[in-house]
Length: 162
Image: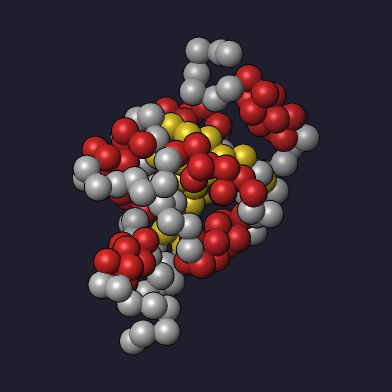
């Protein structure tokens, strides 16, 4: 394995895509309790290029960011679920609290975050733009969030309850 965060087989895939001049899109997140809002967001991100790479926060980084009760699903399982989606070409777990280092290794042509992130707050924006890339945010789907899903489960409500 090289010195970076990306394992060698995945690094070779990225290099092949770049050599073929295929557009690489990158996004990242926790993706704890995968739901329809995540899938729609990822499909929209994927439509912006030829390949979608998803950075997945490690368990330790999720705990630091979200608190001691999270994650509910281990990072390896979250990455495996994401990689199984047709719109995701590669899911990579990162240990840092931000994806800055991973973004620098992936070298995406397009960097995407949810609409709750203003472009000036998107980590990796300066790097991607310095390489001629684009930084975009995709609108969130109202009412579709892991937090809302957890709250519904804790309250003992089914999907049919108001």
